Image (cartoon, rainbow over all chains, first blue to last red; front, side, top):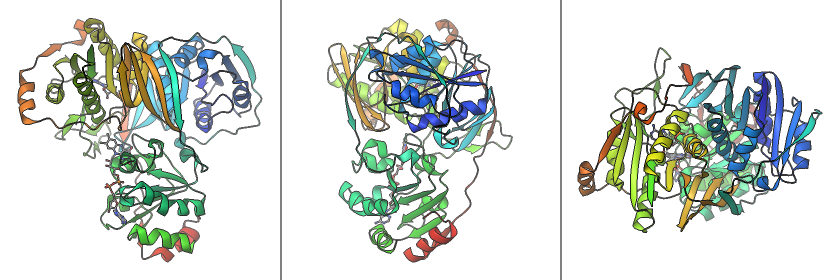
Length: 310
Length: 249
Ligand SMILES: Cc1cc2nc3c(=O)[nH]c(=O)nc-3n(C[C@H](O)[C@H](O)[C@H](O)COP(=O)(O)OP(=O)(O)OC[C@H]3O[C@@H](n4cnc5c(N)ncnc54)[C@H](O)[C@@H]3O)c2cc1C
Ligand SMILES: Nc1ncnc2c1ncn2[C@@H]1O[C@H](COP(=O)(O)O)[C@@H](O)[C@H]1O
């Protein structure tokens, strides 16, 4: 058995999600190799070689990978796929874009968002917004998998010493090109890696109120900020704050849900948090059904008081 | 320009499904079925492209059981011009759907295919990307803004760290995210009109596609339930619990 992990990186460093994928590959068993497809990405390849559990890094460096376009990334994986029984990527925007392309080019099924490895052919994955867990067995010779990061502990970033092998980079597909990026700037921890998340919903009423009320709490706790779909749709915060079935999946030690009702689509993204706190003025809000500690109160009184007393 | 919009019939997003007691699957007998919300957004986007004069014809296509006709009628009530049902009782997995759609693309020669980013039943998030790969086309997943000028689609995508804009040569694949648009309601006159629109029926075999599943679901379980929590009296009590009981702050 041999696993190929598709690294996610920013050319200079590995994205944290890749460390969780490496753990999933280790759980499957056999060699774990990591493919770094980038442009001037030697630092990312070196970083991959130091992750515990990795025995080889394939480094493809070329202009086609300068903007991490899915078409080129998938072609690169396919060019290097021979001999691998499992091809894994993170269930992130990048991994979700690349992995199904790889699967189709190899004529293999993909199993999305695995949360558990039963054996080399069998995996558990949530369906219906996490309301059911399916145990799925693949009859394909190669398994293409995306991995839910919160379900696998991160592999140690350093301590390993894999060899780095240079492989030829593919040519640009010619069908897609990068125009621009609008990156959300934040000094806060990344949502999917944060220990504490302060998350706000429609109850905040506006972007200004969201910031005015939640920022001091997040500052006090060193927390990341998240949001419901309603808060994102209403423009309080950027899209990448959305937690849920169709947003980010998080599992921090503490998730504080403020002014949100607890729709199933939202719960799907945060119900694996260790401790959940809900602050809502409606005592019947479904969020209280999953909260360890519920406070029925007006958030505009309770949150400032919480900040003052912490 | 022809636009193809694949739409999936799924359990309505308001339904909380239950796992069957024999763990063979989820119970979807007698639950409300609807068009996958992301597919509604895809149909709406196609209709807007037609209203702008970019698209000339919108073809909705659905693969699955006979009742997918309802989903297709719904797509036509929103504004699709005609529809194709690829009828089968076999459980379809994304790779099979992508192959069926490729066969339809080969026949119909659309310049654009707009799909949902994910079906809210299997939560697979695969079909659009797979179809793009099978066709050798470019793909823009998680679209929140689409502009088409001449032979180029410029698409803004919702990424993990913000937004990214890419440009694609047509023909291409776009998958929709929540913020792309707000789908209109089908009006009664349009629902009536949709009943008269053409709905073609074909079978996977006619398209030469093997739809046999590659994945077998061995069992389906309830996720672990969270312990019922407590309501605290006030902010002071909450802080006390978080510090001394949960020990998370
Ligand atoms: C296809 C699809 C995908 C979706 N994906 C997601 C997803 O990924 N993530 C997600 O979050 N949602 C998702 N949704 C949307 C989801 O169904 C809900 O609409 C959404 O989560 C509601 O957000 P909310 O809780 O902020 O708003 P609401 O449901 O409006 O709740 C607001 C809450 O704030 C409380 N409140 C108001 N004022 C105050 C106050 N002063 N003090 C205290 N409490 C107050 C109210 O009592 C209420 O409970 C999706 C929906 C669909 C159809
Ligand atoms: N059976 C189907 N018939 C038509 N379109 C489908 C079908 N299954 C998936 N799709 C399309 O692919 C998208 C993503 O689905 P999935 O990959 O299953 O999450 C959906 O939003 C539809 O646009």
